[in-house]
Image (cartoon, rainbow, N blue to C red):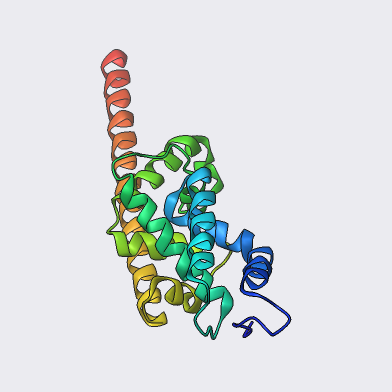
Length: 198
């Protein structure tokens, strides 16, 4: 949407009301990608709109949705920075980011794998983690993510590629370790049975 300024019939507050009504769910998801906690995400959206209301006027916006997403994103970052060190036990957004399980057989260990994936995502460098989380929310494309993160679209794609590559490497390492343990266990069982047979 290209509408950016209130018309003569639409006051600043009416414009903000309209923007909130049209984009609230999307903005919540943007905030949630950063905060990873429902209450913090809601607070970030409300705080962003309060700041815009206090400003008295809005800058010219080429894209309302991108402008609002960037505003909410930065507000959410500020809130997270303010409560640095306080973790969130809500991992739902992290777990939706990437399903790295190669086959349905691995579903047996789903809970453990999800916890590992969440931990690996948390260990990613901040710029990679943010690109991964922001694009995972409501199917935000790399152009929109770039507008929100304040980087070129190509940079978002590069960060996504790097983040997914790092997660894939971790996954393959874990799978390799598990296969080695299984092989070692089978060898020990075979050796034990061979000893009994003699």
